[in-house]
Length: 109
Image 1 (cartoon, rainbow, N blue to C red):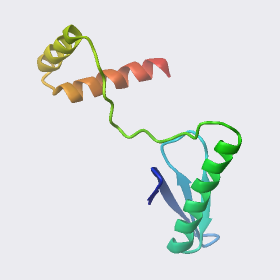
Image 2 (cartoon, rainbow, N blue to C red):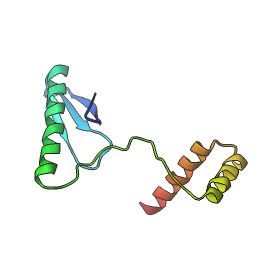
Image 3 (cartoon, rainbow, N blue to C red):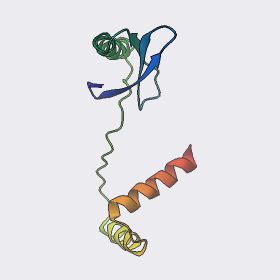
Image 4 (cartoon, rainbow, N blue to C red):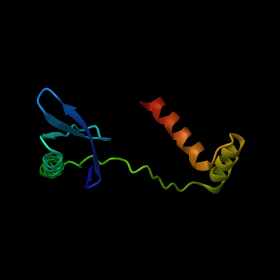
């Protein structure tokens, strides 16, 4: 399910007979539950709306999941060098850049 740009993962709690959801791809923890899919969906919407309202009330930016799209503007020489590096590695520029960013991000974390 998705709502206002947020997605959820769902687990089944067989002991209590409920569905448990958690908003995915953000660090903030937003959970909810319901006994039916319809109840779960309503609880998901309520949880996201409550999270957004709480962030607004606290004057904090709500965390948003990344879309997976990045637009970069770089010096043409850097662009050309990146195209050459991608070609040497046998990858598209997009795949090469994704791998470089992934590597750089893991070195920071």
